[in-house]
Structures are given as C-alpha cells and as structure tokens.
Image 1 (cartoon, rainbow, N blue to C red):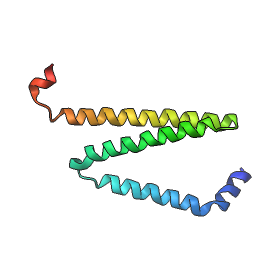
Image 2 (tube, one colour):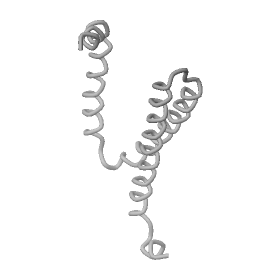
Image 3 (tube, rainbow, N blue to C red):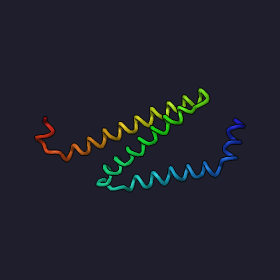
Image 4 (cartoon, rainbow, N blue to C red):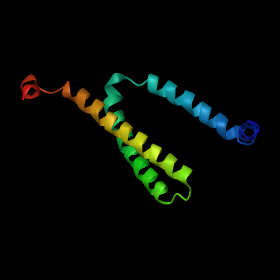
Amino acid sequence: MESILEFIYVHREMIFIVILSVFLGIEIISNVPSVLHTPLMSGANAIHGVVVIGAIIVMGHAETTLAMIFGFIAVVLGTLNVVGGFVVTDRMLGMFRNKQKRRS
C-alpha cells in the first residue's frame, strides 16, 4: 500500500493530466452531434488499428512475463474495440441503404 501511495505522490502531475483528459473526452464526446458520429467512429477505428499494431510490436519486445500479459490484454481489448466500432458503423450505414438491398 505504501508503494502505491508513493507512486501516486511521485507521479501526481501525470495522474492529474490523465484525470482531466478523461473528463475532457467525456465532455467532447457527449456534445458531438449524431450526424458526425459515423465519420468520427470510422476515424477512431483507424486510430485503434494503429494502437493494436503498436501493442503487437511492444509485445514482441517484452522482456518479462507481466509485460507480455499486459501486451496481450492490450491487443485483445484494442481488437475488440476495432471490431465493435466497425460493426456499429456498418449498422448505422445500413440505415441509409435502400429497402430492396437490405432484404437480399
């Protein structure tokens, strides 16, 4: 417990910036109009694809088992985010297709 408190004390500025970034991100995302949601989602999918590739590269250079486990978790979660984003984008774009094309 003491090591956790020491880490927080030493890195308090970095933790403060992360917390502010989370609140800023929530505020920005909640104010995005629904018309822009699909293009922004597609852009986020591209960025998360880069994150997955970066996680794979970092995992390849991992020296400890813990680093390998965290890298694997990062790859799995990033991949789930990319696939889920593409599924949501496809469903949203499906609402704009002709009704005849939807049935086939």
